Length: 247
Ligand code: NAI
Image (tube, rainbow, N blue to C red; front, side, top):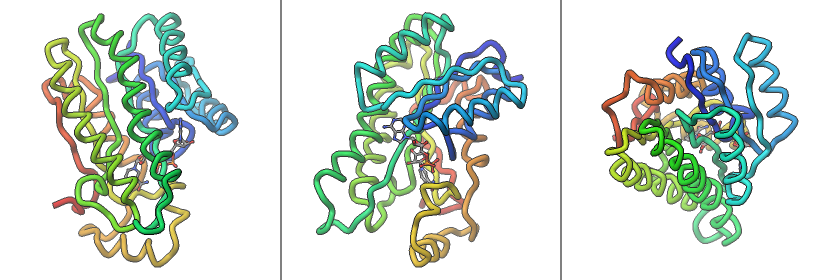
């Protein structure tokens, strides 16, 4: 029970990688706070964890781009659970299009959820971690943010931003024993990738040395490692989980 006595907040927890991270943290004994905008899916996912024997799970319908809502939620969590040990900034979206066709609204939305959301959650949760002199932050970047990907100028820029943000937060908070790392998944089988056209899936698969998509569980395992005491002396790193895609 690696996470016994720990509290963990996971954003984008209703489904996909975020749900799997929540499941594995709960399995390890953590009290998990699940955050998402999809209220019904979130409730149903929390029920699944409880049915599997998880500790009481808190759910919040919060949009991570909304600072007032984020701040209020974090205060509420801190009051109810007394501590915030782990934060996983997993909420993320894509709005793919080629550069010349990409609309400003899709640029802004992707930046807002993936980058501003990560900033807001981290800023407000870090207050408590600094006071505790302990904390672990794990951000979801992407291989797209490391090497680029046609059709994802907005997404890859936001994820490259997450990488820079991770490295800076790690340096700012290291003296307070708060670690901040990121994982960079490659091509993972979730709702996000299921909607891609077959041609795009074929091209993505051809670029993976291991020649298969990853699973949400495989990404969650690495997130949980970085969130655990096994990674106590690791901070400011970006770990690809991508079947060999990243150079
Ligand atoms: P997903 O689309 O299945 O799940 C994302 C979750 O985030 C959804 O439940 C969604 O409702 C939630 N969300 C979206 N906007 C939100 C907001 N404003 N506030 C709160 N919650 C919000 O995606 P998936 O595949 O599970 O991705 C999880 C993370 O992993 C994302 O950050 C994504 O960019 C990253 N990633 C995924 C890859 C993949 O191949 N699936 C590859 C690389 C990175």
